[in-house]
Length: 169
Image 1: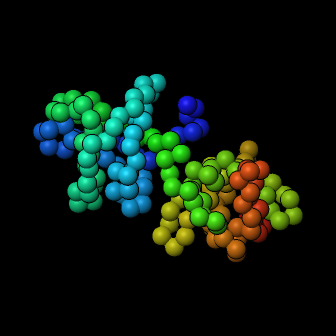
Image 2: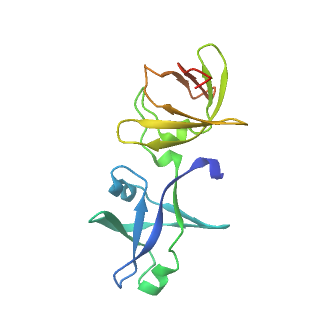
């Protein structure tokens, strides 16, 4: 399994209670969707460990989880700061015209006239609409992710996104 087959969905942020449960900072929407994926692949530095999720739930604005084999607070604390990764194959298939952020990262971005703007580095959630952060050798652009208006075509097979965007902006 290569790292490119994995998606970061959160991080273990601390412990919860005395029975070995962990607090989870979730990148999924809604937050508790992180509990739908098991096994988790935990990563910290060069250490990688696959774990099975036993139980979990939303606790206020946080998510808490019970991982198989962790039964006390001290042991749970050793996992604080570990990234939570899942295999891309664990995600439900996206509908036509829908994309996971992870699918968009790394795409080459060109204008409709074929001018290269760079590569999708990451996305930002702003509330009104998501924003693509496009990086090239010498600059960074923020482009709204508005399908049909700004985003004209996404070709995942060729790792290409065509946009209606002024290259000078």
